[in-house]
Length: 182
Image 1 (cartoon, rainbow, N blue to C red):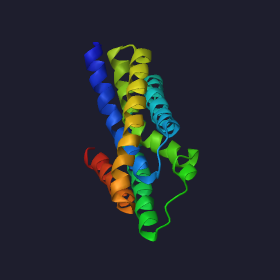
Image 2 (cartoon, one colour):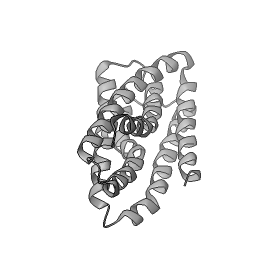
Image 3 (cartoon, rainbow, N blue to C red):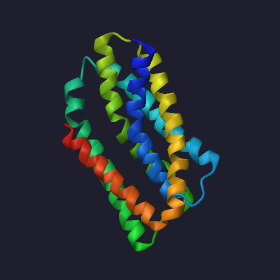
Protein backbone atom coordinates (compact mmCIF):
# COMPACT_ATOMS: atom_id res chain seq x y z
CA UNK A 1 0.00 0.00 0.00
CA UNK A 2 1.50 3.40 -0.96
CA UNK A 3 2.64 5.66 1.89
CA UNK A 4 0.33 8.59 1.01
CA UNK A 5 -2.67 6.30 0.89
CA UNK A 6 -1.73 4.81 4.24
CA UNK A 7 -1.12 8.27 5.73
CA UNK A 8 -4.57 9.40 4.56
CA UNK A 9 -6.09 6.38 6.31
CA UNK A 10 -4.06 7.13 9.46
CA UNK A 11 -5.16 10.78 9.47
CA UNK A 12 -8.79 9.80 8.93
CA UNK A 13 -8.69 7.27 11.75
CA UNK A 14 -7.12 9.89 14.03
CA UNK A 15 -9.94 12.41 13.69
CA UNK A 16 -12.22 10.86 16.32
CA UNK A 17 -9.33 10.69 18.79
CA UNK A 18 -8.39 14.27 17.94
CA UNK A 19 -11.95 15.46 18.63
CA UNK A 20 -12.09 13.63 21.95
CA UNK A 21 -8.64 15.01 22.87
CA UNK A 22 -9.96 18.51 22.18
CA UNK A 23 -12.85 17.76 24.55
CA UNK A 24 -10.40 16.57 27.20
CA UNK A 25 -8.49 19.82 26.71
CA UNK A 26 -11.73 21.70 27.42
CA UNK A 27 -11.97 20.02 30.81
CA UNK A 28 -8.38 20.67 31.87
CA UNK A 29 -7.79 23.93 33.65
CA UNK A 30 -4.11 24.05 32.76
CA UNK A 31 -2.55 21.75 30.18
CA UNK A 32 0.98 20.54 30.69
CA UNK A 33 3.15 18.83 28.09
CA UNK A 34 2.86 15.58 30.02
CA UNK A 35 -0.95 15.80 29.77
CA UNK A 36 -0.67 16.08 26.02
CA UNK A 37 1.77 13.16 25.88
CA UNK A 38 -0.47 11.06 28.15
CA UNK A 39 -3.55 11.62 25.99
CA UNK A 40 -1.50 11.02 22.84
CA UNK A 41 -0.20 7.74 24.24
CA UNK A 42 -3.65 6.46 25.20
CA UNK A 43 -5.09 7.18 21.78
CA UNK A 44 -1.96 6.36 19.78
CA UNK A 45 -1.43 2.97 21.41
CA UNK A 46 -5.10 2.03 21.05
CA UNK A 47 -5.16 3.14 17.41
CA UNK A 48 -1.98 1.15 16.70
CA UNK A 49 -3.17 -1.97 18.52
CA UNK A 50 -6.59 -2.22 16.89
CA UNK A 51 -5.41 -2.82 13.30
CA UNK A 52 -3.15 -5.58 14.64
CA UNK A 53 -6.06 -7.14 16.51
CA UNK A 54 -8.30 -6.77 13.45
CA UNK A 55 -5.64 -8.39 11.28
CA UNK A 56 -5.50 -11.37 13.65
CA UNK A 57 -9.29 -11.64 13.89
CA UNK A 58 -9.84 -11.23 10.15
CA UNK A 59 -10.49 -14.85 9.39
CA UNK A 60 -12.37 -15.77 12.51
CA UNK A 61 -14.63 -13.10 13.94
CA UNK A 62 -14.73 -10.32 11.36
CA UNK A 63 -18.50 -10.33 10.91
CA UNK A 64 -19.31 -10.52 14.62
CA UNK A 65 -16.93 -7.70 15.57
CA UNK A 66 -18.04 -5.46 12.71
CA UNK A 67 -21.68 -5.98 13.62
CA UNK A 68 -21.38 -4.55 17.15
CA UNK A 69 -18.37 -2.19 17.05
CA UNK A 70 -20.45 0.87 16.18
CA UNK A 71 -22.90 0.19 19.03
CA UNK A 72 -20.05 -0.10 21.53
CA UNK A 73 -18.51 3.17 20.34
CA UNK A 74 -21.96 4.83 20.43
CA UNK A 75 -22.57 3.75 24.03
CA UNK A 76 -19.16 4.71 25.37
CA UNK A 77 -18.96 8.10 23.65
CA UNK A 78 -22.59 8.91 24.43
CA UNK A 79 -22.29 8.05 28.12
CA UNK A 80 -19.05 9.99 28.59
CA UNK A 81 -20.46 12.97 26.66
CA UNK A 82 -23.58 12.98 28.82
CA UNK A 83 -21.44 12.73 31.97
CA UNK A 84 -19.38 15.75 30.85
CA UNK A 85 -22.54 17.80 30.33
CA UNK A 86 -24.02 16.78 33.69
CA UNK A 87 -20.76 17.55 35.52
CA UNK A 88 -20.51 20.98 33.87
CA UNK A 89 -24.15 21.87 34.65
CA UNK A 90 -23.82 20.74 38.27
CA UNK A 91 -20.57 22.63 38.60
CA UNK A 92 -18.82 19.42 39.61
CA UNK A 93 -16.01 19.42 37.11
CA UNK A 94 -13.48 16.75 37.83
CA UNK A 95 -10.13 17.05 39.47
CA UNK A 96 -7.26 17.33 37.00
CA UNK A 97 -6.04 13.75 37.58
CA UNK A 98 -9.49 12.23 37.17
CA UNK A 99 -9.93 13.76 33.72
CA UNK A 100 -6.93 11.78 32.46
CA UNK A 101 -7.29 8.69 34.65
CA UNK A 102 -7.13 5.18 33.25
CA UNK A 103 -10.83 4.76 34.12
CA UNK A 104 -11.73 7.79 31.97
CA UNK A 105 -9.22 7.43 29.14
CA UNK A 106 -9.17 3.70 28.37
CA UNK A 107 -12.84 3.47 27.32
CA UNK A 108 -12.42 6.59 25.18
CA UNK A 109 -9.27 5.22 23.56
CA UNK A 110 -10.97 1.91 22.77
CA UNK A 111 -14.18 3.52 21.52
CA UNK A 112 -12.37 5.88 19.17
CA UNK A 113 -10.17 3.10 17.81
CA UNK A 114 -12.83 0.56 16.88
CA UNK A 115 -12.82 1.79 13.29
CA UNK A 116 -9.09 0.94 13.21
CA UNK A 117 -10.10 -2.63 14.05
CA UNK A 118 -12.11 -2.75 10.83
CA UNK A 119 -9.13 -1.28 8.95
CA UNK A 120 -6.97 -4.11 10.31
CA UNK A 121 -9.48 -6.62 8.97
CA UNK A 122 -9.35 -4.88 5.59
CA UNK A 123 -5.55 -4.86 5.62
CA UNK A 124 -5.57 -8.63 6.14
CA UNK A 125 -7.70 -9.11 3.03
CA UNK A 126 -5.43 -6.75 1.07
CA UNK A 127 -2.37 -8.63 2.33
CA UNK A 128 -0.84 -5.29 3.37
CA UNK A 129 2.02 -4.78 5.83
CA UNK A 130 -0.07 -4.38 8.98
CA UNK A 131 2.89 -3.63 11.27
CA UNK A 132 3.95 -0.58 9.25
CA UNK A 133 0.34 0.52 8.91
CA UNK A 134 -0.29 0.17 12.65
CA UNK A 135 2.88 2.11 13.44
CA UNK A 136 1.95 4.99 11.16
CA UNK A 137 -1.62 5.04 12.48
CA UNK A 138 -0.35 5.09 16.08
CA UNK A 139 2.20 7.87 15.52
CA UNK A 140 -0.27 10.01 13.56
CA UNK A 141 -2.91 9.61 16.25
CA UNK A 142 -0.38 10.35 19.02
CA UNK A 143 0.65 13.62 17.38
CA UNK A 144 -2.85 14.80 16.49
CA UNK A 145 -4.32 13.86 19.88
CA UNK A 146 -1.54 15.63 21.73
CA UNK A 147 -2.15 18.76 19.66
CA UNK A 148 -5.89 18.39 20.26
CA UNK A 149 -5.46 18.65 24.03
CA UNK A 150 -3.69 22.00 23.64
CA UNK A 151 -6.26 23.25 21.14
CA UNK A 152 -9.13 22.29 23.45
CA UNK A 153 -7.44 23.93 26.39
CA UNK A 154 -7.12 27.25 24.55
CA UNK A 155 -10.80 27.20 23.59
CA UNK A 156 -11.73 26.02 27.09
CA UNK A 157 -9.98 28.96 28.72
CA UNK A 158 -12.23 31.39 26.91
CA UNK A 159 -15.46 29.44 27.33
CA UNK A 160 -15.13 28.27 30.94
CA UNK A 161 -17.63 25.58 31.98
CA UNK A 162 -19.46 26.02 28.66
CA UNK A 163 -16.45 24.33 27.05
CA UNK A 164 -17.13 21.11 28.93
CA UNK A 165 -20.78 21.24 27.85
CA UNK A 166 -19.61 21.78 24.27
CA UNK A 167 -17.19 18.87 24.62
CA UNK A 168 -19.98 16.61 25.87
CA UNK A 169 -22.19 17.64 22.97
CA UNK A 170 -19.38 16.92 20.51
CA UNK A 171 -18.95 13.41 21.95
CA UNK A 172 -22.68 12.74 21.72
CA UNK A 173 -22.77 14.01 18.14
CA UNK A 174 -19.88 11.67 17.28
CA UNK A 175 -21.74 8.81 18.95
CA UNK A 176 -24.85 9.48 16.87
CA UNK A 177 -22.76 9.93 13.70
CA UNK A 178 -21.16 6.53 14.23
CA UNK A 179 -24.54 4.80 14.48
CA UNK A 180 -26.07 6.71 11.57
CA UNK A 181 -22.98 6.02 9.46
CA UNK A 182 -23.60 2.33 9.86
